[in-house]
Image 1: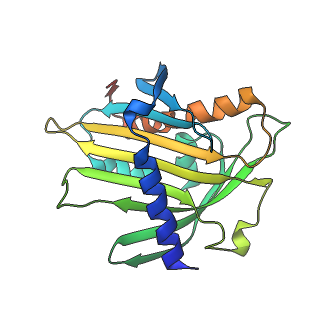
Image 2 (image 1 turned 135 degrees about the horizontal axis):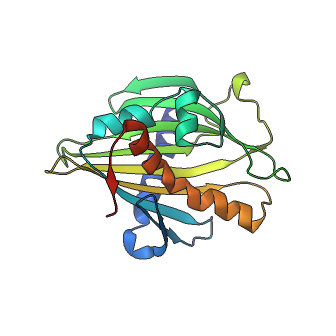
Length: 216
């Protein structure tokens, strides 16, 4: 495991995700109070979801989104077939978790995708005490494991980004942004089903917590 390389990949994913500012997105639809929009990019569509979770703290949200229990993760992502932590390390910047995920294909003609990713939470009290950022990104080449032998096709999670801001009224403003490469042909209709469904994870977290939501 190349820890420094993993940290560099994570930082690059954070920087890339933040470069996709709200003005670059076009509205797509609203579902389950999540306002979904998209931005076209040469490396694949970037999708964004925005939601307000009422009477919710960042700590509550983070506890759910960090889970490695498959039975819980399936409630957040019904496509999940496997989701396990392979390894982890800590340093002055915090905890880094290496995970293996298999996502079931929504179509029998398309292979399942699997991913080796790193999850890390960024929080800087000196910049903003009420803001937390969770990013996952693929770390293929920086981490290998016999437990993560590819099933189907190895996909690339360019970034999955959750930005959490606690408001003075006790609510949680959540922004999700995601970009991925399937690394293989997928029918457009199937690809769109997967891509535009990704932001709904923030509504699924709220539902799991039993929280009310509203649109931004």
